[in-house]
Image 1: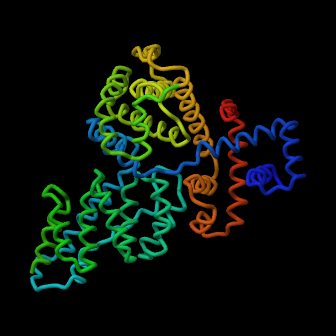
Image 2: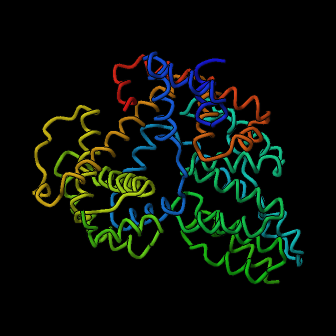
Image 3: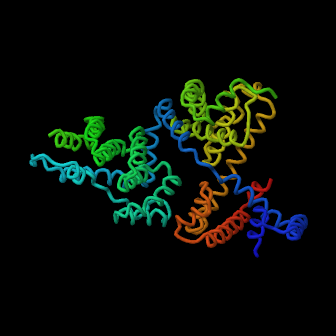
Length: 248
Length: 192
């Protein structure tokens, strides 16, 4: 058994009385071992964090309220690091895709399923993680997600969003996984929190919330959610057309 | 030491009390902004420092901590420590180090001790995180998952493997991390 295994066994209370005595004896005499033991405990104490997403969210929105330049600072950071350009590219490509998917000349009444199918355009997640070292968990989650295996991708995305709470695209994808697997209230929760934020997916979140209502045949709620998308949003035209389709 | 009435802000952090936290921002964010701007920082820096400081205090409060001085003084101390730490790392110049804006009269030794502990904890984390980057990707990911509060059983599920393997691997990775940290001249930071 190596040192770490012994330390873990000791801390877990899995040692016999004799083993414990020998362990404590060694702590007294073997300085390097004692250092490893202390470091093991310190690392656990410092790094283990019950993440508190709710508090972080509250503080972030208060930050926006009380520090005006915050937004600018973030954008500059993205430009210089070059890490997030693909987020913008992805958002732009969704917009272009949407233009082609909406077919304004179609005028017959359509079912909820048809409207959903036309408008629920799922954007692929990037399978190459730029800027960070390649992250196999994210790659795996993205591949499953892009293959539309939402049920399998869901727990991976759930972990990822906890590791990277700031990545709005991952949050949106998790919401979409919930929606596609029939967990509507969890899906709507996710979309709501994105819609309340200021990420580039803010208005996509409104649209997805609307789609979640549509999937449950709640046309009126769906239309109400779409109406919250303002004229300056990239998906405003798409939302307007969807409202038209649904109002027929 | 008697608990200061401002301890309500500590409770607000623990309870995520949006109303009271808004009050906290309204009262104190201006001062911190002013301090950071005066010391070579931007408003965005101030915003980050302020939020991080509140999270520091929250983590401290989770382990049991009560405020015995005005919140403003404590918050200022934490933010100043954070900012000084950051600029020393970036090697900025022309920063007034001694300036404590008169707050030191308001705080007692135990408050300084708490502020000091937060600073130590921050330095430890930054050392651990630096060395974590030198580990292989699979180790790094595994340790981060383990620290995120997940049970080993759940981590095994996410990584698509068995509990026994994860437990073994977690031990190996922690061992490697400790070896890497021991090569750093600052490794004694983790020893007391």
